[in-house]
Structures are given as C-alpha cells and as structure tokens.
Length: 585
Image (cartoon, rainbow, N blue to C red; front, side):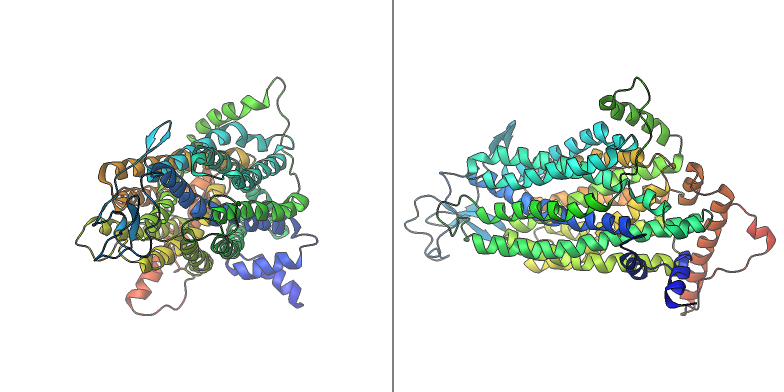
C-alpha cells in the first residue's frame, strides 16, 4: 500500500484522525474531493477580521471613545498636557483635563489636584454614559441578530437560499464596515451606533448560513460514505472540520490584528487627531475598520466561488418565504422540545455563550478605561489570544481523542476556564486587592492567555455538539435556532453589566455576574447526555449510543485509576463481563 492509500485508510479510523493530517489531506485534494471543505475553511479565515479585530477591540473602544469625546466636549480637554505634574498641577489649562492612571482609571485634573471625573452622558434614546453606550449598542446589535435569525435563518432549508443568504449577508456586513470612514466627528456617535448594530446583525446572519453547511459537508466525505454510516467517524470528521475552521480563523485573526494595529498606530496621534490634515476624526480606527471589511470581502469570494449551493427542499404550495422563518422557528422550538438532550444543551449554550462573549467586551473596556490602554495595545492582547487559541484547539482536540473524553466534559473544562478569568477580574472590585485590573500585564496574563486557550475550542466543540443533536435534514433550521439561543441571551450580558456599572461605577463589579453565569452554565452542561441525544435525533442507533457511552466512561475510569497509580499505559477500555456489557449506561 503506497503512502497516499495508507493516509486515506488512516482517515477512515476515528481514533486516527487529527487536525493536521485532516487539513493536509483536504489541501492535497483541493481540486476535487476537498474543494468544498477548503472553501468552507476559507470563510472562517475571511470573517475573523470582523470577529477578532472589529467586534472584539476596535468597535467597543471606538464607541466608548466617541461617546466620551461627545459627552465631555467643551468641559474636559483631552489629554492633559505633558507639563502637568503632581507637584505643580496643570497651570494654564483652560478646562480641567483628563488624566488616566493605570489601575485607577480616568481622572479629572484641574489646576490644583486630581479628582474623580464627573459622570457625563450622551442621548441614545435616553441618557447613557460612554461605557453604557458601548454596552447597550452591543446589546441592541445582538437583539437584531436574533430577529434576523428568526426571519432569515430557516430560509437555508428551502431552494437555493442557503448560499444566497451567505453571500447577501456577507456583502451587507462589509459595506457597513467600510462606511465607518464617513464618521468624521464625535457628534456622529449615533450614526456609529446604528452602523454597529446593522453590521453585527448581518455578520451573525452570515454565520448562521455558514454553520449550516458543516453537517452536510461532513456527510459527503468519501470515507464516511464508504463506512456505511459510521457515526463515530462522522462525528470526528465534523469535529476536525470545525477545529480546522477555527484554527484558520485564528491565524487570520493574528494577521488582521497586526495590520490593524499598524494602521491605527501610523495614522493616529495620541490625542486621537490625524497626521494628515483634513482626514477626519480618529482616522486610524476608522481606516482599520474599513480594512476589516475589505479583508472579509476579498477572501469570502473564494468561498462564494467554490462552495456549492446544496439546494434545499421546495417551498410548500401556498407558503410565503418571508413568514416561513417565524413559522419554522415556532415549529423548531416545538421540535427541539421533543428532544430533551437537545433542549438541555440549548439552555446550557444560552447561558455560557453569553458569559463568554460578554467577558471579552468587559475585558476590553476595562483595559481601555482602567488600565489606560489604547486600541493598538489591546490589539496586541488579541494577537496573543489568537496564538494561544490555535494551541488550545489542538490541545483539546488531542485530549478528547487520546483519552476518549466525552465532549460534554471537554466543554465543562473550557467553561471552567471562564470561571477562573471572571474570578480574577472580580478581585479588582476590592480596593485592598493587588490584582484584578491593577496592572497592564494582567491583560496578557491571565486574561489574554486563558481566554485564548478557552475560546477557540469552546466554539468548535459547541458548534459540532449542536450539529450532533440536530435531526438530519433540518440542519439549517436547527442552526438558526442555535444562533437565536446564543444571541437571545447575548443582549442580556451587556445590558446587565451596563446596569451594574451604573449602580457601582466599577467595571470590575460586572465580573461577579459573569462568574455566576459561567458556573450555572457548567451545571447545565453536566445535565446533557450527548450520546442519548444523538440517538434521539437519529444520528446513531440507540444501542450503539449506549455502547459508546459505556466505552468512553470506562476509559475515564481507567484513566483516573492509572493517574492514582502514577502511570498511564493506554486507554483502550477495560474488558467487561457479559453482565457489565449489557448494563444501561
């Protein structure tokens, strides 16, 4: 058997599949069998410019800054001139100026002393402070995502709308990003907020259509077809594809964050003005946002070219597609309720996805407001997150396959990391604490490192787990509900954190809420029976599901025993007598 045939044979064995060999196999077959899978990976590469740079850093900081500049316009010059000293104050300054002290935050410096900055607001339906403005725009944007998911998400199951929806939503997202170049003064903060809401809505909708291709592409893998429906192989192929997409995305995230950092640094002075006369307000950040849109559009063209339509079923006679989404969502909810394990996981995802997403936004704004970091410095943290996220995807995929750890336990470990990060941030609420947003290095360790270790693997395993628990033929509809479950809660975290800040005037107080949500999410994940859920939706025969669960649990028991004896020899699973083999899982 030659090398290529040996490689193909290895891919047919679930335990032999690893991300590197799977990715190399698809790249070698990019002109034929691997063409669509590579096109699917490229979309992750494309959209990470938005997810990693724009949504994670540039927009939260930009929204906070533009609202702050408008709120304090005419009453607080920014920043204090370098002539200010603790001994002599700021003589000759017309207005009290703003000074930012790392670990303390933004203070007001008049001619005599430093004092807390007086709270100011802008009008956004009702008066809100700069931090609240950034958080509530985020909350509204994910609420729009949920609305779009309900209206448009299930359309992917009918006719040729799956690929059309992916293309249209991607184009609209890119246009919104490029339009940030038109935000030329602080008084346009409302326009900036509206653009953010629309852009995030279209971005999320495109992700729904994109995710719905995953189970279809895994089912069309030639080795799965040759295996006579081996569900373990199908699950590993799906996990591998999900992991490769995440890795490709995080590599692209590193590149785009570096480029955005260079753009922001080169085009902007420390006071936010441009090096080029007449080029407008905060041109560095706005140019970086436009670049993110251009990157997304450029590489998405590859996906549009090589990803087939995968036409869905015909629309029933008398039905109108615009209302089909709402009707299907109602029926999907009823359908999900027929599958107890799918419903349990939906509730768990509802909780822990909100905690993890909100942690990122709160951390970025804490770095900006408490640690006095500019957008460029925070982008360096995001670069670290992406480097570690690539490692995290490989590490947890290897742990799952080598030790045969059930996916739900992997998810519990990952959300546990979110608990640790939140607990660290909580400590900053207490004035006597020496850690918890007191030093700039904390943004790199533990926040950046552990968030990166967790986030890539978490999304990959969550995405593939939901595919496992979705009935065959209803992938797009169920992935729309998956996104609704995510965004149906993601408006809650920013809104609650904004209210906590309003009442306490402490960003660190928000970490208490995020820690509690993460712990509750772990509890909900522990209640999910993954294998039974796959059997319920028809992904694997029930008897096979029970046998698979026994084997994986036996492997964990053996691993624990070997750890107690200080050695690990293998994880093939202990032999059982006949009575043990037939016992219920």
